[in-house]
Every structure is written in structure tokens, then in C-alpha cells.
Image (cartoon, rainbow, N blue to C red; front, side):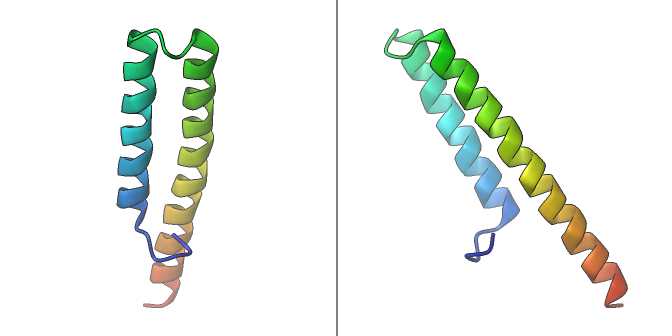
Length: 64
């Protein structure tokens, strides 16, 4: 987002990554631990994105 990537694009990239991890898990190329780690990383990333969106909304309200 600091590099001009929108929150929506970032979320879509995370979703795509989770799809890949899920597919690899189904094919037994990844283990449960890797699936869990991917989920935890995604949750933490979403917290950052949510904070960014909230800050943007506050900034927009203050600028009007």
C-alpha cells in the first residue's frame, strides 16, 4: 500500500497465496504446519490492512 498497491489488490494476492497453499496441502506437498503458518501470516496481514483502511478513513474525514 505504501508502494501504491491498493488494499483490495493486497487482499486478493493473499487469497491467491492461500489457494496455492491449500492446493499444495491437498496434493500432500505441504504439511499441516505449513497450512497453519500460512493462515496465521494471512491473519496478521489482514490486521495491518484493516488498520491501514481505518487510518485512511479517518484521514479522509479530517480532510473534509
